[in-house]
Length: 326
Image (cartoon, rainbow, N blue to C red; front, side, top):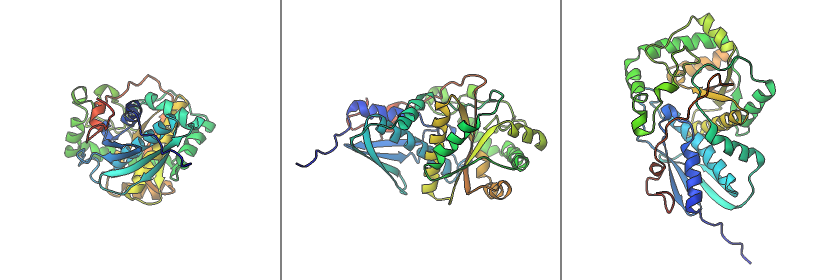
C-alpha cells in the first residue's frame, strides 16, 4: 500500500504558525515578513516594502529578522507534531520554503524553545548585576553554533569600547538616521509596529541599544568597564551573502530562545555594524571567527520588559490566509 500523503494544515494550525512568526524579533520591530500557505507548503517572504534606508540600506537586518521568523516557523511546525524540511532560498521575495511532513513528535529541546517564543522580550535596559553561569553561557553558544554559524564572546573589550564609542558619536550626529529612527519610535500605538518609547533607555551603550540624539557617550575606559560586566556574544558567518544573513538570524533566534528558556532576557546591537569599515575593524581588533552580523547582549532582568506591539495577524498573508485566519 502507498503511504498517505501528509495532511494539509488546518485553519487552527495555520493560526499557530502565524502567531509564532509574528512574535519573532525584527529590526526596529518592523516585522518584515509574510507567509504564503498552500496545503503542506509554507513560504516565508520578506516584505520588501519595509525599508530603513539609513539604518539598513542593503536589507541585511531585514534578512536577519526573517531568519529569526524562520526559526519560529520551524519550531511551531514541530510543536504541532509534524516533521518538516526547510529550504532556504536566495530569491528576492521568498527567503525560505518549509515543506510539512508526516506526524513526528517534537524533541524536548525544540518544544522548550517553542514555548519560549511568547516569553521572549527585547530588554533595552540594564541587567541585574551578576554574571551568567558558564554552563548557561556555553548552552547559548551551542544553540547558535548547532546551525552552522559562529558564536563568540568578544575579546579585547577596550577595543570594542573604542569602536562603539566612535559609532555612537557618528550616529548621534547623523540627521537622516535620527529622522528615520524617530519615525519608528513615534507611532507604535497606531500601527502595531515600531519600538515603544517606554521600551527605550536613556542610558549609554551598551544598555541603550538604539542611539538617539541625547544618548550619552561615555569615555572609552568607562564604556570598557561597562562592557566587562555585560554578557556579550557576536554572531558571525563565514561570508556575507544573503543566505548567510538569513542563517545568522535563524541562529540568533535559537540563541535568544535558549536564553529565554533559562530565565534570561536580551537585546540586539546591529546599528554600528552598518557604518563603513566597522565590521572589518571588529574582525581585526577582536579576532572574530568570521563576519560579524549581530551583537547579542543578555542577562537577568533588573526590571520586567513588556512585549512589543504586533501587526494584525491577517497582514502576514499577502494573498489571503488560504483557509487560515480571519
